[in-house]
Length: 113
Image (cartoon, rainbow, N blue to C red; front, side, top):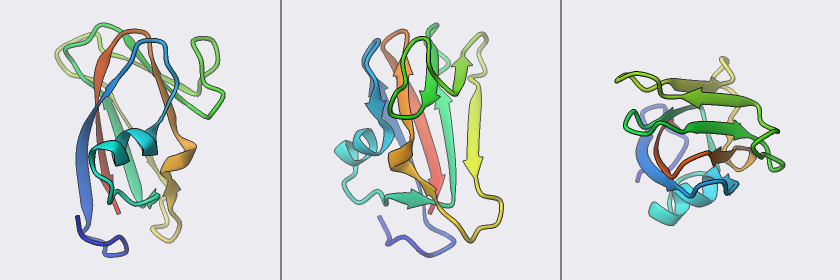
């Protein structure tokens, strides 16, 4: 993976979540690709469309009843959530994002560095 800092760097990684277990996004990504940077310019998270569970996104205290966003796949088109600062000057810290799923599921993560 190219070094972070260039506007043209990006990655797309699919991770697998364990049912009812809070997992830090950066740890999941770096377990697959150790060179994933700590921060990105834009982040997109998508629950895989083949799963009927709910993907929860939040902070380190995430749980089934405490979360920031819930993505539920209800059709063949999986929902996607984007995060970014809009200015391109600040970074989105991947270590701040935690995920929690109500069913074992695959999650697609796409980011511009």
